[in-house]
Image (tube, helix red, strand yellow):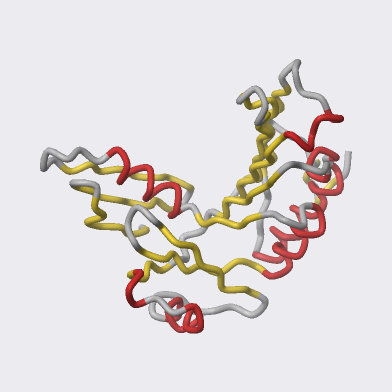
Length: 207
């Protein structure tokens, strides 16, 4: 097995369903999640609506470049990440993001929006996504080298920030009876906190 420094690249979770077939990968969807301390991915069979692979790799991150270097070794080591899939997506988990109301959003100003709350860093690309349930855009940075690495293996991969599915799921489950729904998403050492009521976003922050 390859090593990063003194750490061996080895999945601590490795579940493969008996129905998984490498030759059928073009009917599967690949979902990757990268967050502080781990890279996880799962494979979903879109024909039978079933998850057929789940793997998790611990990351030993010293800095952002070390994260990208470690991810590159994992991509080279695990052949499943390089298969041709029907579709693929990355969930990039990071405390750095900014919400912008839909009516005020202008794609030409994404770097300025992000600068309101976060300092930029060399080698980052500012991305954005529409949060339909809240009529907001989420603006977030992602390392350019990581995006390049991902698109080398999965050319059509879509990059998401964790705020998008998290906020949408909380709003979708918020009661319409005047009661609030409160939810927290933990990713060490941070947490995202959301309050929604009557299918509307009342509060979002990262601590």
